[in-house]
Amino acid sequence: MPEKILIVDDESAPRAALEMLLRREGYEVRDASNGEAALAECAAFRPDLILLDILMPGIDGFEVCRRIKATPETRLTPVVLITGLFETEDRIKGINAGADDFLSKPIDLNELLARTRSLLRLKQYTDELENAEGVLFSLARSIEARDPYTRGHCARLAEMSAQLGGRLGVSGEDIKALRRAGIVHDIGKVAVPDSILLKPGPLTYEEIIQMRKHAAVGESICSPLKTFGIVLPIIRHHHEKYDGSGYPDNLQGKDIPLTARILQLADVFDALTTDRPYKTAIPCETALLMMDAEAERGWWDRELYAAFREMIQEARNHPEEEPSRKSANNTGI
Image 1: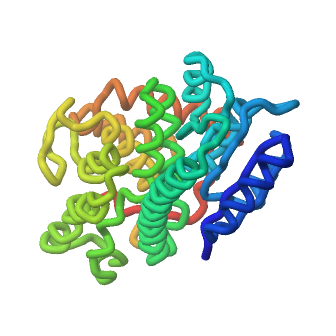
Image 2: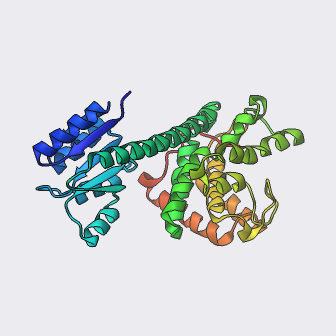
Image 3: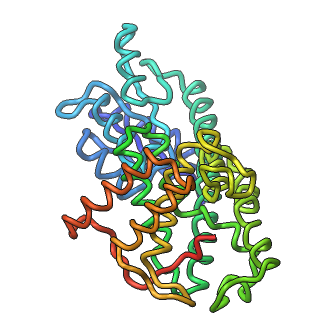
């Protein structure tokens, strides 16, 4: 399938010349004569590369670029700004808008083709990376689907963790990591037999040992993805306890990454308040009382738990904000 390029220029002659050249090179090409049309084509055509003139009536190229980069579906699409502007401040403005490269008018066609090939190779690598992430998320959801009691657990965990992270003022990157970890935190359970994962009763010691391997296995599955660098510690350490009695590494106190401590609270709460094969869900207030006792015992970061408790109680006072808790489960192991 040919790679797709969108040309945006309010002047028809340069637009036609570029289109003819790129079609001759085997690319699928569409064009747009203004910023509004360009944004519409981005949504419909889903180009692999955008050649974007800066000086256009209405929405200029800087603003079009900014909107493209602010939209999740197109933010990774390379944008080349085509400009007759040579001032440094204009280049800086383009960089701040998210431009990936620049071409100066009049355009050198050999330079255009070289930059086009280079950026399309980069887009191909990005697409492969996104596909790999998609496979991981699909695998994580397939694990959740193995047990009807776990339905919705990952989505709730992602949402609760991100909400708590936001209340605590963690960085945007950490909130993104929490959302990802919420989906894939139990991906290592792919290595746990159904006879253990779905057992309708307490596990034996040997089965517990087998189950506890899932945190390290999950980290290993996700580790090849460079973009998961800050997600990996959450996957590995979301079953550690503040007093050092957790697993897999018996980390203690602040040695447990903050993001892992955030996700573990959401994980435990969701496990308590949703059905399991061998027990029914307990009411929210009862779950919080149990977690109060566990915090006193030293299992949870008390300061962090206090913020979590406050968040849950606020959600109870505004039920429309509370995640749905219909039949779902997590073993909490």
